[in-house]
Length: 202
Image (cartoon, rainbow, N blue to C red; front, side, top):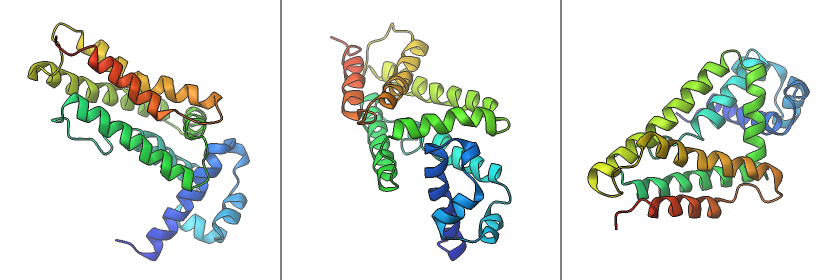
């Protein structure tokens, strides 16, 4: 339901996300968040009693949810090729969303947020391990079905392929930290397609 309270909470999350993803956690004070949102301290604390709680929800949303291969492509009955296309499109939409918020380098923002979570999000290590396993399992499921349907050749190690497909994004994304142009999604798609077409049966 689109209520005033829901819109206010959304505003807080967006503005705080920009601050947390581009600054050090310790430098993001409630006072800074008040200034960015135009809200009072009371309004902030009504939705998020602590800064830590706000930070945790931001990490859950922008890292664990939005970067998941299951986000908008949860239908693992898709062919591997369509799954890849939809996953890259999902990343493109996320990049466009963050650009509108003023995030010019999605790679830096999300890696910065992710790394700090290990220090300021209690229990994040366990969540990150579980998330990583789910991501690998999603790719594994899609690849296993692609082999069973004859879309790609049999005889390949499914677990290795799942790890390769998953890590193509992480490698390209990390590389984007050190550029002025952010993650190159066109290059990422070309990498996925090169790997995919190398697996097709002759």
